[in-house]
Image: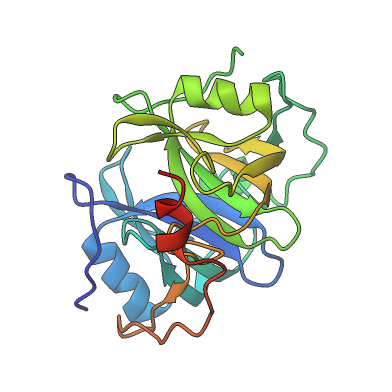
Length: 128
Length: 128
C-alpha cells in the first residue's frame, strides 16, 4: 500500500465507520498504518486503541466484526470513511451505534429511547 | 452548556458531519468549545481550523453553510456527530462530500466519476 495519507505525529488517522445498508454512522476510531493494512488485507476493521495502546480487531472479544464494503479517504487525506456490514452492535455499551446520545440546542441530553442490541456485561465477560 | 465532553489536550473535539436527508458523510472537522457553543447558538456549523488556527463559520466565504438538524455525542463523549442541511457542496474542492475518493482493497485510487457541484477557483476567489 502506497497511499499518500497524512497520519498524526502519533502515527494515527481517524476512521469513520458507517453502516453500508442504512447509512447510520456507527463509530469513529483510530488506525495506525498496520491496522489499516490489516483492514485492507482481511476485509475486517482493525484499529489502534489509544487508551489501551493496542492493535485491535473489532469484534475479537464480542464477535461483532465489521466487514468492509467501501473505503474512501477525504480531500485532505487525513480522515478515512469505511462503509461496513456490522455484525451485532458497534458500541461497547450494547447500542447499534456509539452515537446513541442526542443533545438538544441548549446542550441538554435527550432521553435515550433506543434499546440495546446486547448486554455488554454478558458479551464481554463471557469471552475473557 | 455544561456537557461532559472530552476535548483533546489542544482543546479540540472531532465533529463528523452527515447530510440529514441522504445520510451521506460530508466531512470531518474539529471544534473547540467556542465553535461548539456558536454552532448550538446559531444552528450553523462553526469549526476550529487547525491549519489556519482560526475560528471558522462553515460557508462564510463560499456561502455553503450547514444548518444543524440533529446533534449526537458518542459513548465516550469524545466525538460529535451532526446531521445537517448542506447548502451547495461541503468540500472545498467543489465536491458534495470530502469523501469523494474511493480506494480499493489494494490501496489504489479508483477513478472519481462524481462531478463537482461548483468551481472552487470561482467560488473562493470571488469572495476575497
